[in-house]
Length: 412
Ligand SMILES: [Zn+2]
Ligand SMILES: [Zn+2]
Image (cartoon, rainbow, N blue to C red; front, top):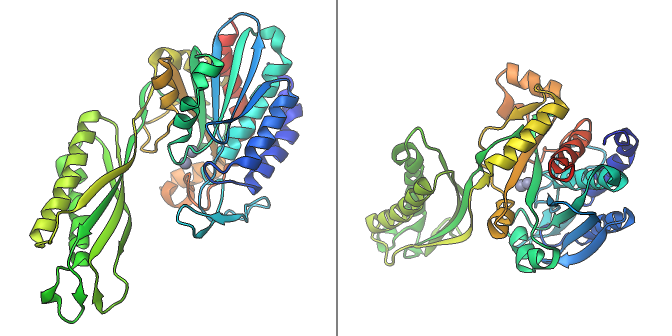
């Protein structure tokens, strides 16, 4: 299957660098979708554009056999790139709040797209070796956790048939050349919350006439830290992070309100229910303790379930990876507190799915950081302005992984 791969790599590298230098925010992936759709059309795929906004679906039918959904996400992040790479992004764009932001492929979705073109090319050239249907999904807006839903609600399964399995992969801060599978719960459930604390504003010189929302917010933030440390069992896991906190306009004015947004990550539904209830309880308790004139508003503005890999499909892919890459390169992934909307394809389609990780960090840098206990400092994580995978052997590994996994079903 892979004889042609070395000859494809120069082209995949320039495609990857082109995508990397031209990142587009969620649901604005117009250039990316056009370029990738054109490439797939050129390979002989039947391409349907604008599925769920900027999504692209490409099918290749080759006789009787299973239908395999292969998914790559294509959106970038509002991050100003600091990798110093010759193909680093200098793109700026308007963010959600209308303010200008730097845009970068800081999560590596450009790598996912390049892998998919590589895999699509090999599958299209080697039709004698497989039968069935390849159903490629280029998904927008993974970072908003809404692209998968948008494509499904635009009739993905009704229009293109419900596949027999869904496969996806993500580049990760692990040594390049390695692949990581995991059966069962693999990525956390995410809940994004907004808390508005209501105080009573006034003159900064007369605090006794006010209810200060800044003090209320400060003690709420500190008290929220005790949920994971004091209420979640040490054998369970959860994350509560307050990502934004806004209050006030001037040093001598006490404002009316404070607003914060949080991300909550959990793996177990019972832990999730407990943590979400505890957050509301803390906000209400701190408001009551401050004699707030009105109770706080706690709202969830984004929510998606944990990513669970179906054990049968995962075992099949893991065995194929061990055969292709060898046991030193085919490893088991620990659970990740990051999240993914990939699980929705399985949930809505009622089909098995599995999602794996492909290392993208320079193996020497990784080994050095591991030896000196400096992984967190020296190995940039996805979403960091310094994050970008090394091209080799990451590009080839992801192409091989996707084709190897697809062939578990298509190869008969
Ligand atoms: Zn991401
Ligand atoms: Zn991602």
